[in-house]
Length: 341
Image (tube, rainbow, N blue to C red; front, side, top):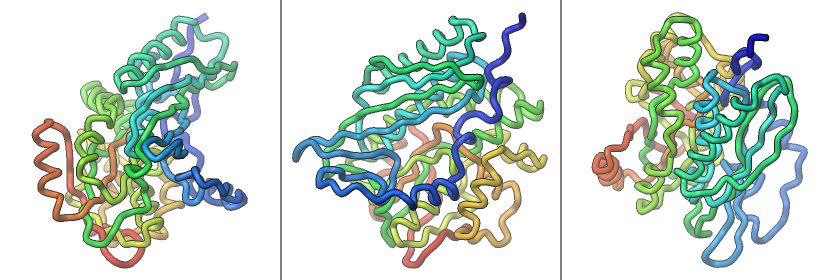
C-alpha cells in the first residue's frame, strides 16, 4: 500500500487551521477571568502566552500550539511546528526552558515519519535553548503536531500586545505571505525556490530578533500568525486603545506571494480573518493583492513591534548590525481601529 502524503491527510495545515478569531472571542466571553494575584497574563486580556509570577525576579511563560501539516516533508513539518510554538514565548519577552510534544497521527503512517517529526522538533527546541522532555501521542486520522512550552521572563519585562502608545513606530521582523506561497506552490504557480524561502522563514526562531528588541523596552509585541497581519494589528490596536496606521507600500512580501494573490488564490484562513478584522480595518483604495497579503494566515511569522519613535533609528541600526530583517510598517496614533494608507 502506498504511504499517503502528510498534506494529503489534512483539510488545512499550519496556522490557517486555527479556529476563527471571531468565534474564539465569542467562545471565551463565557469564561470568567481567574482572580489570582500571581497570574500576570491570562484571559483578561488574552495574549500570546500565559504568565505566572514566581517571585520578584522570575515568572513562568506557558503556551501551547499545534496544527496539521502544511508540507509533506516530516522533518520540515516538525521544525515549523516547533518554531511556531516556541515563538509565542519570545513574543512575550521570555526565553523557552522546557517543551512537551503534542502529537496525533494515523497508525498507517510509518514510524520513521513520526520519528523524523520528533527529531526535527527536538533539534529546534535545543536551538531555542530549551529541552524537549516528553509529550503525549494519540491516534487520529488527521496528523497534528506541536508543543507545550514553558519559559521564563522577568515580571517587569513582559511584552503585552496591549501596550502600544500614540507616537510609537510599528515594525515587522519577517516578510508576509507564507500561506499564499504554500498555496501557490501547491497549484504549480510558484517553484521550489519560493517554497524553500518561505520554509526558511517559517523555521527561523524569533529568538535573535527578541534579543535585539529587549534592551529597547518595547511598548507592545506580538507574533504574526494565523489571524494574519491585519488581524494581529487589530488585536494590538483594540487592546491598547489606540489607532494603528499602516503604510501599504511598506508591507514586506515573500517572493511570489503577491503574484499568487493576483492570480486569485486565497487560503482557508483568509475569509475567517476578514470576518474578524475587516470591520475594524480601513483599507479604502488598497489593491486586492495587498488585502490578500494582509489577511493571509501566517505560520511562524515575525514579531510585530510597537516602540517609541525616538528609538526607531537605533532599533533599525541594531538589527542591521546583526544582519536581521526589520521593516518599519506604520505608526501608532490616538484614536481607534486600523487604517491602511
